[in-house]
Image: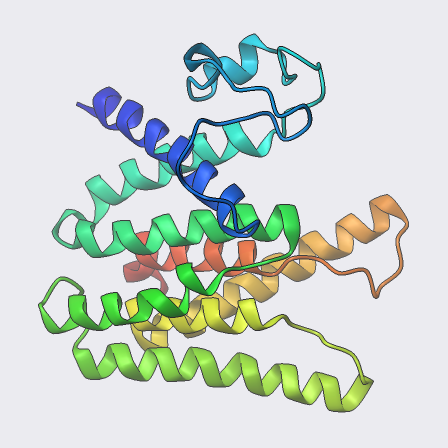
Length: 242
């Protein structure tokens, strides 16, 4: 059964890759997948999750340009996260499936383009509120709304203070929207723990990255993936954090 789930979710991860790639580029979701370099149409056997990337050695069959390793990484991460969700929180799988899918899309787009679409953040907040009202989440409708407002307010406030102090933007609006979405699905506690975990991870990895690359401290590093990691950790391991 686990293998079946893994295969299904690998395919779902492949679909989320397509959504993330096309959404921030405002490309239509209809039509065949193409190489972003030479625009050649990809054959079905070049779209098998993970396996095709490995078989092609990470290069386009037509033009030999590199295919981003984000494709197999997102597919594998999707399979791992969704399988864990099935076994750890099966009673709330439907609602958290929506959240995790949005987190994966936003992680991919933020890593690649430093952009997070509101179609997969603010537009999904009503879904979270509806799930809470229907008992599909372990929080009430009031707690969902409070978590959303908390997530929106705390990062907006931090961004405003940073801008006043330095004259520069410290966080993007996409990060603010993303924490609002996380709060809507997990409540104030979930938003707080997601932000805390993200801050610790982001600081540690960011410092290591700057030290390794020799880049300046004002180098922009996407924060969305760290928020997503914090949210996943809270949903899957929340009972151990409280």
